[in-house]
Length: 279
Ligand code: ATR
Image 1: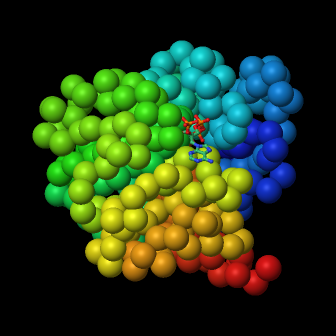
Image 2: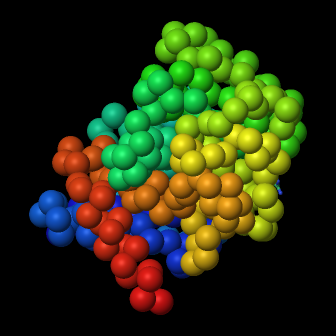
């Protein structure tokens, strides 16, 4: 019998994770099976325990259960502790280990798949919710020159600035944040949309002068059509990317945690884009 993994979320029907992990398994020859579980709202713990007790080796966790998974874990990786959320659970002899691969997935997609180095870069992060919190430390790890967090509710950006101030100074990163007026003057090298705005076609507040021909505008969301953020950035001359590569790369990092083998995310991303283009 193959080792069992699954993604749990609600809704879960359209999750691409089973497809992605099946590709990784084929690519690496790892003997795994990866399914999907619809977790009832308020019923995460029972479902996760049931899967583990039946011999499951690990789970990916998606909306709305990442905080429940954080609470379920007996131990946390530093990046999961900083994010306050868990998207990868491993079930082993030492109990339930929680990790968060979203931030690393974002960074890998930007640097490896899109070919934009974050070292010395000026980065603008839009949003100060769970998605933004999860990417701050992995961004610092790439030694950018500056990270600015801009959020509709300025106070929430300031909470993150406070939380990560010490990490920023250790990494030598100029780190600040607030409302829309907190952005530094001039073009940013990378602008990341970590707001939930794309879900309801809302454009997060941000000065147009942050975007230019030298900017990579990255939306963590993805969909069949370019988001309003992507369209806006392109109109201002920026290069733009959606979050499909982040999805594949966070999965690749989870696979690596579980199996000790790193799959080729770029190849699977190209295949996934090709498959989606046909629909
Ligand atoms: P997630 O886990 O996806 O980050 P969250 O923690 O609820 O979800 O955070 C949502 C983020 O998107 C917040 O930064 C939110 O801004 P506020 O803190 O001001 O609420 C941001 N957001 C949601 N809808 C938005 C919109 N229409 N315009 C701008 N920002 C928006």
